[in-house]
Length: 295
Picture 1 (cartoon, helix red, strand yellow):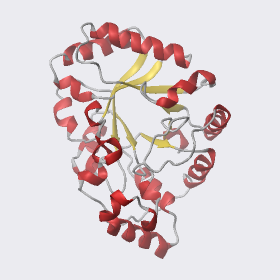
Picture 2 (tube, rainbow, N blue to C red):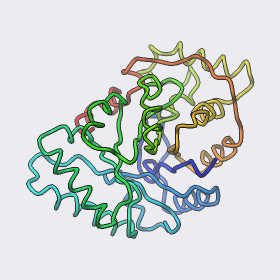
Picture 3 (tube, rainbow, N blue to C red):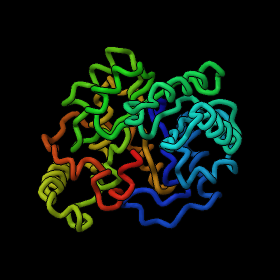
């Protein structure tokens, strides 16, 4: 099972996540996490050029690991897109001390729908031809984005949010479509940035209006004497069409708990979900609203 796990790196030295109240990890603790991840059999790290944590990576031993990263939004005034993309990738390869990126995602795929969309695709294809990247992927916040994007380019990988509450990837039928088209499907935010692991009484005030969902989830787990971690992981693992699961962690203890949980399988899941985009799409949260245009 660990071969399906990708280590998310946003928290490795950064302050990413609405529930992350821990101080930034120092380089020693990050090295411990990477070492433990390798011992689990994890062979891929997910990062982004815009992540604060990426500045720590040149201190790390990334040998034996595949690196996925995300290209930030390309400035509108950019004249030579191919040159801009090439420089970003060259700098990333240098900073990470690697020779190749396994999958390069577009952090703002909606740019492909704009005037210079074809030039962006061409620049990514150039990277592939130069063997600087293996795969081209699209990182989305809403599976409905794929309705338009799929007509523009045949992506190798699709990365989408997915969890017990957020079932848009299933409801839109894009999980089945992508699997049928032999695309690699990666899912992230399986704990909804940690919110789903919180008990009802620990929810941030912004989410009080959805307390009933957490109350039902708490009751379901309490009645069956199961942990939320085991339930949420088992739910995502139950979908065979999902190739990779991205897990972000704040510290080594969390990774160890995930390691233990991966061996547990729960087969019955509560019919608890939400269609409210104010809840299931983090871009609508107060914490991220000001940066929404970047995605």
